[in-house]
Amino acid sequence: MARLIMFHGRECPHCKKMMPLVEKLEQETGVVFEKREIWHDEANADLMRSFRPIIAAKCGGQLRVPTFLKVETNDVMCGEVDYDKLKAWAAGPAS
Amino acid sequence: MKKRYWRCFVCNDIHYGIAPPELCPTCKVLNAYVEITAEEARKILGGGTNGAFTPADFRAAIERFASGQEFMVNPDEGKVETLLGGIFENEKNHGFKFCPCRLRTKDWEEDLKLICPCHFTIHETYKGVPDGECWCGLFVRRK
View: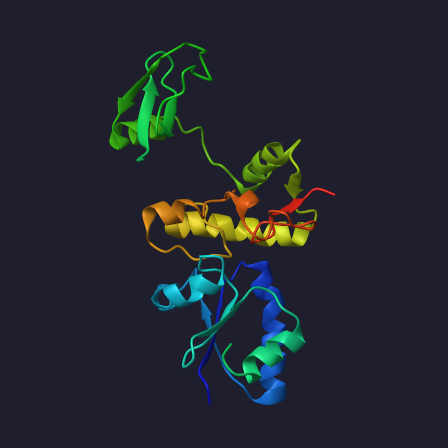
């Protein structure tokens, strides 16, 4: 199974909105996201920084949250999206 | 060009920039600024603190900042409350009022761009977008 990471912030409204959609997707399809909170956990922050060239290239040059990452393929999606888009991204090939 | 610190020799206003203002905005004296070190600036600014700056104070400050602009503070009170909580958590834990929806890189110049309010009017989430907002949604384009 592909390694999927969701980088999120505890006080980020977009992340709060995406979290139930991620959990619904996990329940419905069996995919699992590593949920990494980046403002209150420095190890998670460092992990996100380690992907900075990959993430920033797709996210306006910055490390934004929420960011979704497929580690094996470096496929990145950032920001708030609807459920269908999230599902398609998680299931689809790297763009 | 690198920004430096400047002090008004009349009223001790501090300016951080490539060059000092010609006219001191506080005492209105012309050509009053002299360059100082970052340490001197910190000492002067630190001594001038006037007590706690609460989320309510910051809220009032950004309301004044947005007044008359093409943007305003998001009318969604729940979102604003969440964001102000994050901004103040970040100040407590990381030293500045960093945006809760982006991560600092540990590059000083880059991270200064994350201090709220950031220069969001040039960001693709706002510039040229009819319903534009800053990345975190604290500021939205005024209808």
